[in-house]
Structures are given as C-alpha cells and as structure tokens.
Image 1 (cartoon, rainbow, N blue to C red):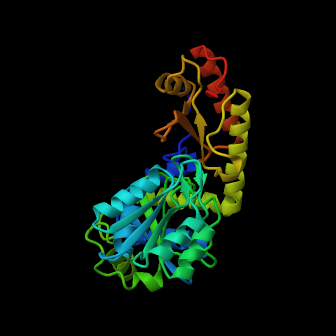
Image 2 (cartoon, rainbow, N blue to C red):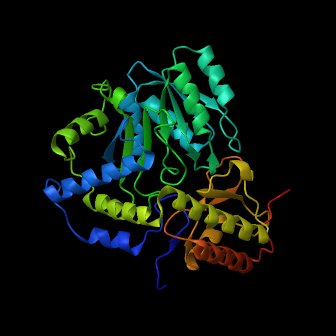
Image 3 (tube, helix red, strand yellow):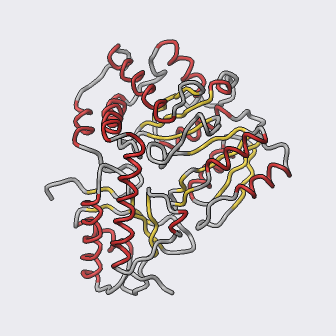
Length: 372
C-alpha cells in the first residue's frame, strides 16, 4: 500500500502529515522552549472549554485511563463515596479503578442501548446522602451512546456533589462549556478528537476544589495536585514528559483552530457519521443505537446474520483494503464498531463503505443485515 491504513477507531486515530512531522524534533524536557510549548498547550486547552476563570488543566503522561484514575484519586477523598452511572464498558472500567484505589463505589446499571437517567441519578442522591461524587462517561465508546451531561451536571450542582466527567472521546467535538456546566474534573486525551497522537492525558480541575486535594492520592506518579503545584512553580513536568506527544498535540491544536475550532470539528464528524451510516445501510447493516442517542464519534453495527460471517476474517479483509475497524465491546450481542473521528472526511468514509462492500463479496455474504 502507498498510504497508511485509515484507522476507523476511537483512538489512536488517523493523524495529519503536519502532526506527524511535528514529532521529528527532539526536545529537552527542562529546556525553556519545551516549557513554553507546555504552557501554550495548557492555555489552548482551557480556551476550548472557556475554563480560564474557574479551572486549570494538568497534563499527565500515559493513556487516557491513567488520567481517569489520577482524577478520581486526586479529587475524591479516601473516605469519599463515588456513584458511577454505568451503561457500558468504560463506565465499568471507571467503577473498577475507583474500587481498586480503595474508594467506596456504588454502580447504577443501565442498558447498553440507553443513556443514563437523570431521574435515576436524582433518586440515588436523595436516597443516599453519603455519596460525595458522581462519575459520568460523556460518550460511552463501548457503544457510541451520548449521555446527558448538562442534566447530570445540574443535578450534581443542586445536590452539592462533585462531578468527574470522562470526556475522552467527546472533548474537542461535542460542546462542553465550563461556564455553563459545573464539574470538579473533566478528563480527556491527546489521541482523540483533537487528532493528536496517544500518550498523554489531561485533566481540567476546578481551582476551588484542587486547592484542597493535597494528600488525597495514594500514588506518586498520578497525583494531579502535586503535578499542578510543581508545574505552576517551575513550568516543568515532575517526571519525564512525552515530549514528542506534546509537540504533536500543539500542532494538532493549531490545525483544530485553523479548521474553525470545536463547531467545525463536530460538523465534519457529523458528516462522517451520516456518510457511514447511510452507506452501511445500503449494504444492509443496522446500527445498534437509535439515531437520537448516537454520538458522531463511533458507530456500533450489528454483525451480519450470515453463517459465513466471522469478525477476524471480516477485519483482515477490510485491513487488506486499507481500513482498520474496531471489534465490538458488547457481551450479549455480536457487533463491530467503526469510528468517525480523526483526520478523515467524507471521501475516506465512502471508501470505507466500499471496502466493506468488497469484503462482503469476498466472504460470500449477500447482505450485512442482522438476525431479526
């Protein structure tokens, strides 16, 4: 092949040549030029959520899950009680990491094809005054379902509960405004809708809360309060930073702004999603979610009912045509997922649909229709 595979995943994802080229220079982690890059990225991230007045942003080495764990450990006191609203795999992960860190966690389950319920949250908060914090996955990428952030945030505010938002696959595309949505922590990462490369998370933390978080974390490396204090004092990271990842993100943010910022990024992803769903429908495929709760980030499709279908063969044949798909994350229903994000547009989505059509023909499957 004469081009990289197109990554139709929720991250890592396809990046632009300009973002790749940004990684060709080595940086000294204590050098003034790199310190300036860190400061520039932090300012630009706060711009995206209009958070300069109320929040700070603390970057952290590692995958997005590192930063979710760091946010919970830093913000939630050791005797805190966390309520996790669970409608998918990443919600379950948030609950597990909360429990592994010794925090009390209550999990409220919902069906994977439904958003979490604000009314159900209010009932839980009314019933149990010991709850101190709520964890919400904004876009549950196990299915692609969009959860009701504004309503959940309003309830947490009214009840005086802390809110920790995993906005991993939504930040930079779906609207989040720190002036209108009250949260204690919001977690995102470099390799998602900002179209950087993986290796760095970042957590927006409400200043009024963060100042009281000293000593909460039981981890040295993941203590966001310590990272913040050191960074504010020196401009440096406490431990070796992912230098190439950070400068790639700086370049990706420049491109994000040039494209038109968050509204333009969302419009492109929505067009990608429509192009994908319409094209796959022509092949007989059915999305797992109803359109009104489908985020334009990743689409879960039912697997074809045909006996010749087997995901690994399907995956390998699509890969041979230049496209990397994503396996399903559901336990009860056989599915696969196709991402709509990254440095791609309508042409790539149409090409992906054509690749799937060719793959079905190769496998002898006349239609992608699921079992009734």
